[in-house]
Length: 158
Image 1 (cartoon, rainbow, N blue to C red):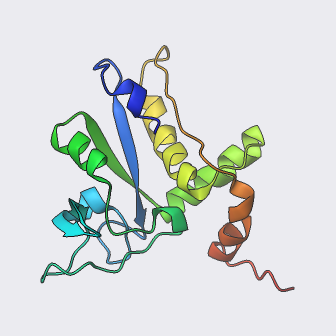
Image 2 (image 1 turned 45 degrees about the vertical axis):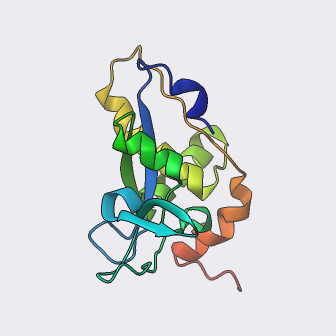
């Protein structure tokens, strides 16, 4: 939804952030554009993570909201036309961004949004100081605190 109003404005750079899970060089990823290929699933043609036979591959991400083997046709079109670029962020990077934003701003982002925060933290130092970055913080991160704790090895049953 955040891209919609900016699509017609070529002065706005659109960057989508994919869930790389444990890395795009592993089988435990959900980075569809980085690792997938065109296919058909659930009645739509788009990019999907697939095995060698074209069957949908299992995916992994710390984020349940990003744990899907494909992307919607609009994102596929934006990628194919070059209007948007897509980058991959690992679980480790997303968790670090989750903790950073929570600690420094008191905003607990959803894990999905923490992926975008992580990429913005990489991108910002490379841009001139007058550039503006808009990040969609869609969702409450309080629902994800237990998942972050488990990811970090905290026993929640003490």
